[in-house]
Image (tube, rainbow, N blue to C red; front, side, top):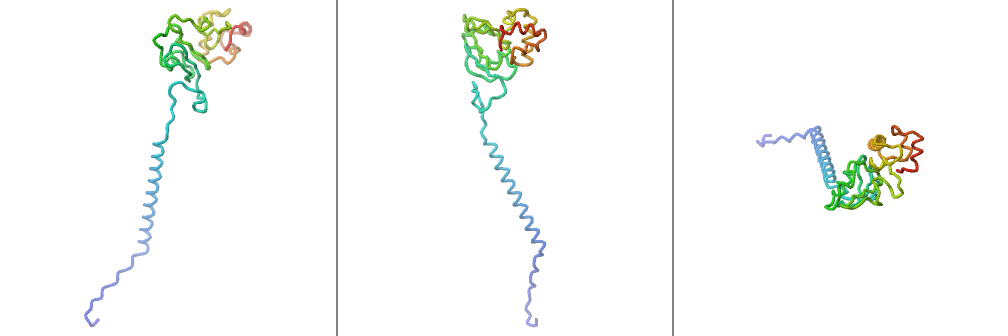
Length: 206
């Protein structure tokens, strides 16, 4: 020390706990960044996922599984004839709308727009001057039997002992419960007993 030289003090070593704190902080930052990247990838994948939509006439096998609803084949004087899937409880007016509406040559008075449609029905919209298919009334088949699911009030009233009141009850029941699955379902309609249903069995169908 007698030579007059100044001796610089050696730097004190960084405390061990400080280094550990820095290492832990860096680890937290890395975890946060990794999470942000993962979330970002998930958002991008969700945003680019394809959305399948069915537009126009529906096919029973288009989606691989039949959706809940009723299948109605709309034919005749409509803009887009075809097979459509309608919501349960739909009416003729809904089926015509699904098919693009009446075509210019249609006779709107030839169909009952307020009637409920049934699963598997073919709805024919007549043209001006055209009669109903097979020359029959709505809901009456070529064999003369009345279809409980498609017949209108007038067709139901052609059945023996079925007047306007009972005919309306049939329509009200199918509006509330859906299509008749069997002729015996008439027993659930007020005013129809076993004897009356037995008398109608060969005159009606579903």
